[in-house]
Length: 208
Image: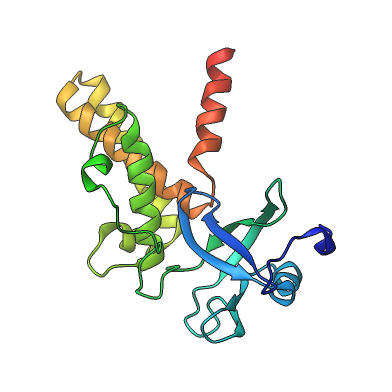
């Protein structure tokens, strides 16, 4: 990336949209100047320029909620950035996973777009649980215990699916498959593997 090609505005700033590289959820909108951009490229963590404090700030320097940069893109006009990150905790100062929590039209949010939308919804919820770690949440418990516990649950649910299928217990099979899907999505999040990549692989299998 040639920083000299970036079109900073009259204040020397460029907007930076920060997106979770795995869930694709937009986390925040911030601004970079040349120095913060250079620090971001150098450290592989997000640095921004605070317009209110008029100073550089390293995301997570005090909270520990840093953002590891996976990829940095600029748009066709070279005057805006998309920063794909692996967040190490909430992005918002309120403690929320994303700064974009409110909808102008809540009814529109509740419209079911398609029968598989639940995968995207569940992926977002799991990402929020990993970032925010709410007390008493089962998903929080899984992330706190780590990959070995998550893998154990995936194995257990796979075994339960097999047993239910062998017994031709369709009601039980339905719930066991749902539990297997859930724990698999938790595993994907723990491994930082985007669901989109798995779906692309599934599409590839379909073509064979």
